[in-house]
Each structure stands twice: as C-alpha cells, then as structure tokens.
Length: 341
Image (tube, rainbow, N blue to C red; front, side, top):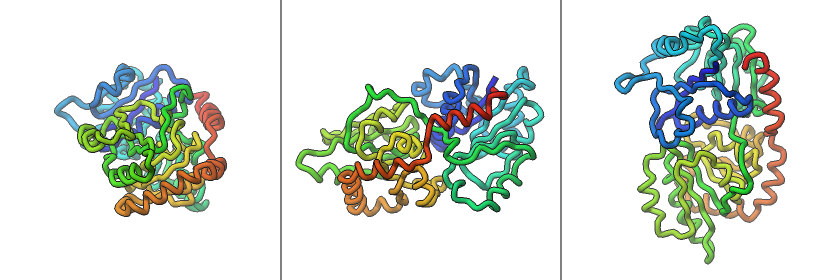
C-alpha cells in the first residue's frame, strides 16, 4: 500500500496534491491513500474522497512533526512493513521522516525547496533551479540527506498534470489563474484594461481554484463584462490552456503545464516559494516572469500582455527549447520505482 502525506488547505493550496496525483498517474498506482490534516471542500474531491484520509478530528490540529508522525504511525500500523510512504509537505521534514523510517518499507520525499534536511530513501525535487546550481551546492544537498538516498532532481522529474482531451478545449484570448487558493482580484485592473483595448473585446477566462473564497465577489465585479467567463473549481485546467493564446498565472505547478503545452505565459511570483531566477524559468520555456508588486503598474502589464498576444507565434517557437518531455519524465520515474511500487 502507498500512503501519501501531504499539505492541502486554504493556506497551502493544491500544489502538493497536484504533484502526488501526477506521480500516481505516471506510475499507474491503483492502491493508495492520501493523508491530509482535514478535508474541506468535499464537492471538489468527490471522486477522490474514498482515497483521502483526514489525520485529525474536528477539534484537533497539527502541533509538531513528532506528534504528527505518531498519529500517522497509528494509521498505518497494520501495514507498517509493507507500506511505502511518500511525503510532500513544507511542515514535515527530517524529524518526521526519521521517526517513521523504521516503520515502513520505503520513505520518499517530494520537495521544491533546496535548503531542507531529509532522511529518506528517495528525494524528488523538480525545481529548474537545480540545473543552474554549482556542483558544490548539490553536494551540500546530498550531505543533508540519508546515506544511499537516491536523488531525482530537475525538470526531467517534473510532476504536473499532462492529461487532456483536445476535443474539450475552451477557446479564449487570455486565461487568468492564481493557483488553488489564490485571489484572482490581484489581476482586476489588468483584466478590465485588457477588455477595453479593442472594439471587439478579447475573450477572457478567469479560473478560480477550489480554495478561493471570493467567488461571489469576483462574479459580481465582472458580471457586466460579456467577454469574460468565470470558471470555479475546475479539476483540470489544461482544457483552458490548450485553447488560449496567452496564459497569465502564479508561478506554481501550472508553469509546468503551460510549458508542456507550449502556451505563451506571463508568470507572477506570488509568494516566497516561487523564487526562481529568470534563467530558471527560461529552462522551462518561460521568458516572461514578474514580481507580484509589478501588478501595481497595470498599464505596463497590459502593454506587455498585448505585445505577447501579437507576437505569440514567435514565443511558441522559443518555447520549443523547453526541457519538459512527458514521455521521458514518465520513463525516468518508472525506472526508479519499478522495484518499489
């Protein structure tokens, strides 16, 4: 049995969930459980609900790594020796991993930060930043992990959704997205100004994640705009990406998805975890990335987006240098997991 222990909530969004769901698809895992703190928004996870376990009861909450590990061990106690544990969490690290290490068959960590210390059998980090790091730094990463740990590093181990049906694509000029819990109103001025550029307004799509709390406010603000359509709690955003000309998004998992589909993309670094350099983004075929604070200059953003729109075919050609190859990625994972799963 495979047990995934992940962060998933309004605070942490969908990134960890998307990564483990990608790994499940890559390896065609049939029997698994995804362990989270508590399940909210049950309607979005309706099809997955039978595989999701809430670790904490209504009145209990996460306190520290060791306590969490003890509760988790009670959960898997009947399957300890045959259990493979795959963890994707910013809160759970070395202490948690070492505490449960001897109680399971294998322990694997998925991380997109390079500074964390780990005690695992396999360490996965798909950050393109790794391609630009010096050898001394990579040695330092390995020194922070258990001896004989296998390291799966860089975009050739990227975890993202690649499943889409071209027949279901939704046509538009621009798609705006801000992750599973992000506030789309950060783009409000840009969206409204884009709507006024042409006599025949652009077709604009706004995608709100399942943890976005202000759907009604956004719906009310853009209700009078006939060229704007709002989609809430979409399980697969790829049908929107394959049908749009320009994608505007936070620099999360979706940047791998637009890279895979070769969709011209303007990325915004919305939090401290999205701190890659311009060179790192270019490795994924993304040549346009800005800081969240840059959204204050809405006129300049609109000018840039319009230029991207007019030169989108040139941008697509540039994106063919992207290091994302889904067939190779799946092959890489199957090679390393063939004796584990």
